[in-house]
Length: 70
Image 1 (cartoon, rainbow, N blue to C red):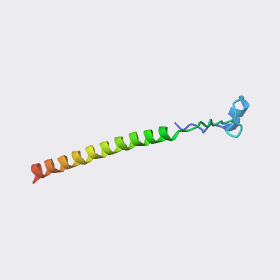
Image 2 (tube, one colour):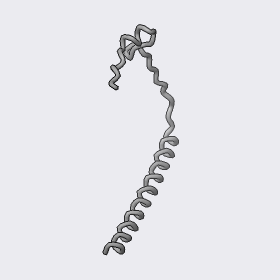
Image 3 (tube, helix red, strand yellow):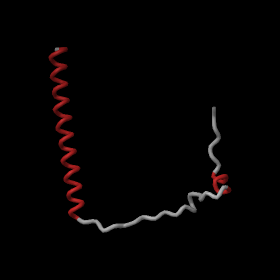
């Protein structure tokens, strides 16, 4: 069953704002360098731990394949 795409004029007729009428606000907060550094260090530690485990698993998999299929 093919449904017709929604008509943007119908939404405007029902009182819903169109994309051009929608109001968007962005709240800017003061960012401390300590917060950024801690966040980046945590992210880097998680990345390196995941990358290390991935390398170990791939090496073990390749060694197992070598022993099984020669």
